[in-house]
Amino acid sequence: MRKPKPTRLPNRVAVGKTHGVIREGKFFPNNTQPRIRRKTWFTGITAGLVGVGLASAPIVQENLHVQRQGIALIENSRQIKKEHAERKEQIERFKQIFKLKLRPMALQESMFKAATVFFAEQHGVNPRLALALGHAESAWNWTAESRTGAQGLFQILASTDKILVGKGLRKWIRKTNGKGLVEPLYNIEGGIAFFAELQRQTKAEHPEWTQTQVENQALQEYNQGQDRLKTKKGQIKAKEFVKLVRGKLEKYYLKINPRDLFVEFEEILDRCRGFPKHK
Image 1 (cartoon, rainbow, N blue to C red):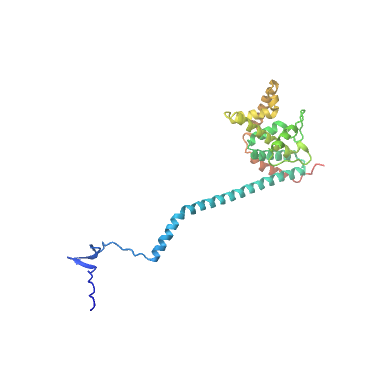
Image 2 (cartoon, rainbow, N blue to C red):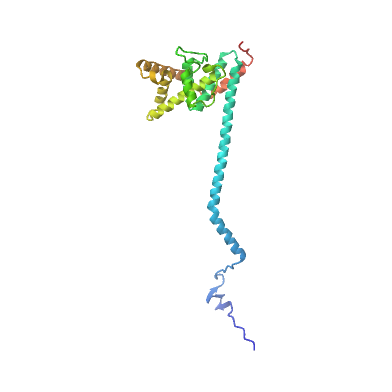
């Protein structure tokens, strides 16, 4: 004899005029019954992937940050190499033009000023003050020589050049082409590099000083040296030299844009190409 099938209560019932569903012994009217989400293999896999993704999100973000930093470093390195190549090309251009020995002295003076601005920017020196310093030292006569043995546009001594070489203060022109200290580009960078070093030393000794005070003290040491500056005569001459440089600065270079000297140099070069060379 077969067993009778158990009777099941209907899921859908009507209470009065309200239709609904009975679940777990509770009556839910239509449109208010809770939605039962069936768990399937797809749901489990999706939940697992989402969990793994959330857990690995910080690692992914960190890797992206590292990659961005690496890309930025590579771009920065490329930019530095490009700027270095451009500066080196500019120096080679100065050298080649000076070898031409064109007759107009205005061309040489224009090139010396442009080179002074270039090296001042490389060594962190005020370009206008560097121009005034070169003007006061030699009036842009690259063969100038003093009674004390200082030579060239920035009146460099042999002992000063040894200090520059020993400390590795030169960034671009480290050797001469046989002309010695009077070689213009070698002399210009040497003078500016030495003046920049004096400014750094003064700033370290007197951090409370203003930039003008630091520059004036560096100018005095540049002209007389630290030993002679301790004497009364040396102090008097050093103050006169500072006054001379400041006068040149105010009269010739304070109101100009140093970068315009490059444009002026190119214009003079174009006008002087037809002139004969020195014999």
